[in-house]
Image (cartoon, rainbow, N blue to C red; front, side, top):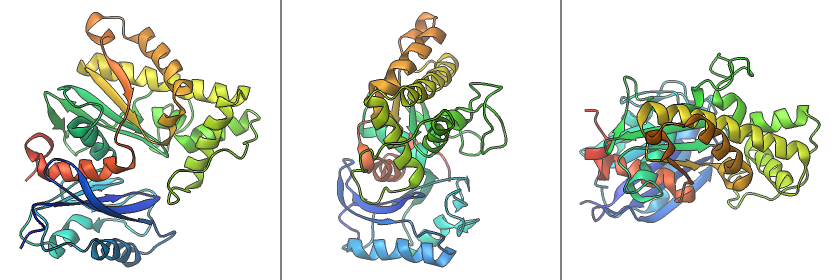
Amino acid sequence: MTADGLTLAVDIGGTKFAVGLVGPDGRLETSERAATPSGGEAETLWKTLTDLLDGLGMPGRPAGVGIGCGGPMTWPDGEVSPLNMAGWRGFPLRARLAARFPGVPVRIHNDAVCLAVAEHWRGAGRGSANMLGMVVSTGVGGGLILGGRLIDGGTGNAGHIGHVVVDPGGPPCRCGGCGCLEAIARGPGLAAWAVEQGWSPGPGPEDDDGLYQEAGTATARRLAADAAAGDPVAVAAMNRAGRALGTAIASAVNLCDLDVVTIGGGLSQAGPLLFGPLEEALREHTRMAFASRVRVVPASLGQDAGLIGAAALVLAGESYWSAP
């Protein structure tokens, strides 16, 4: 018995675990969420996930299982080592879920790739054959669609725009390099830079979802709130992030001839404070006609995007899944 053609979607991140059932039309029918256990061991993390799965109350076996998870991971085997989850190092996530749900396709990709897939399939990038989907939050990642298909690259890491170098003399990055987009524009790094420049954060707004209380993201939200209130250091920080994003996107556009770039994640909610300097830098570096036509727009699917994109690995595999 299958769950009425529904696909099970799993979204694993440093701040939350989410599971849901997605219909063939991409509609999220039901979902369950829980905070990622702080300092959880491997089996504690696994139990958090299985408890959520049990809570869904699936009426039988799903048509397939799609998974988005923070990296790094071996792809497509799905042994995961998320940076923000020390308990999972080489954890066989895909194999464990395949054992729990035998006889159906089980497919996994990086969580930022799943966000990009969701926006292309059912969101702000729908109708575009050539798109970059980005997430700007505690990290900066992305996924690349060319010719209407997800581009994986040799190891599943194509589209990882967070490690495009935008300032060779810039700050060190967690990858070991210097001046990467992620080192400048990720929320915690941006907030830390602002503090170094003399910013003292105000109280700021709380996140809409009570699960999202990770300190770096919350600080970035307070930074955006202070920028909106006119704090000069906060405004300078948003300008710095926006220009770095625009410069990196220009490189991607010139290389890949993109129609549209979608940007999601907590920092993207800053609106014109971020998108204004982004557009300014982008237009400075996209002078040829083919590149100047690109549109950069906010992502539209919100917190459901990770689950919808994970489900698309199964439901629209002809476009988004190329591995065995």
